[in-house]
Image (cartoon, rainbow, N blue to C red; front, side):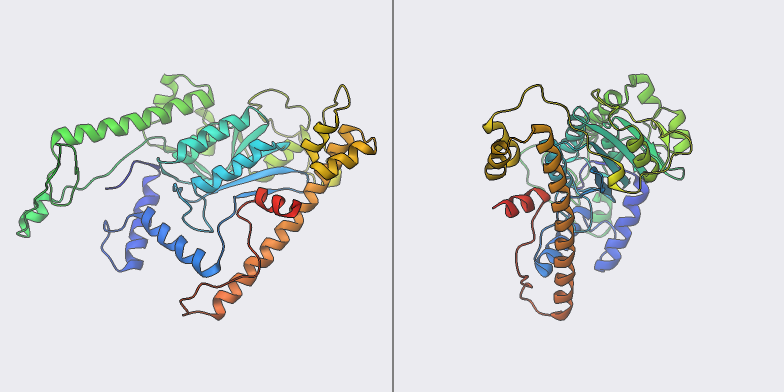
Length: 396
């Protein structure tokens, strides 16, 4: 039986058609979540790696979290967003919040299960640093629910935004079974155990029970939008019937704050550096005629001044035992140490990106060379599961 969905229905219908056709099976006989899990297992076994968190950084330290495509709970495909990977990335950012975070969104939404944790993590992160949702194409249903927790939402001109709501489809096959001369015998411990078992009639009481679950899931969705967007329940009710809108229409309804693409968001962040010192900070457009910053050197890293020089323990906690002790011994100012440490981290990030790209390219080449073999491809070294793991490996 399918789970509850907070996704644009148009995408799910097309997806089910494609997956059923590829598998040579009738539509309705394939669960999209199970299909993607199988595909992920195949790729992970063939290439010998686990998917990394969908977080990247600009040269001047702005974190970009990619939320792309249909969203599922588990790690479905190494090349597609999912709640587990997104949450890993957000947890890293919560440990060491960067100067700003951009949620780069192009998604119709996804399953309800697993999405709430991502919604809560974005809300928490927005209390600690500037978080901007940048919709570039589609920001619907669960994807919009996630975006609503950012300090502000931007959408490119041709984006679609909305499709707020929840649904759950079950199919009553009882008449089809009867016409085929089949009789289903369901042995169950209760009237609601085994709902929507193929061949069993769905009773009015069972349908009412399922509708109650949909209403419960949707109530949490609407509450998140209301709190995240500072909207009244009446305002949310007016935009939560499943319709979606253009970016301009969404802005008029209070679902979007600004019209602009990712490059406009980055330019605005760079133009307002140091101005966002409030919780759940919002982002305003850059001044007219201002161009996006082209190089990290043009955007210095700002560090809050410390009233007194921290002790040795603070240095070792912040920068590692050996490096922290060296900085403290040399009499380095804590602010200067932070700046130097951030610059080192930025360089390490670039090195890790290059290493990961090289390893993945090597894995793809090796997989191509051993097509048809059942033994998993062994790759020299271990590809880190996340950026934090890569840092720990280097530190050790």
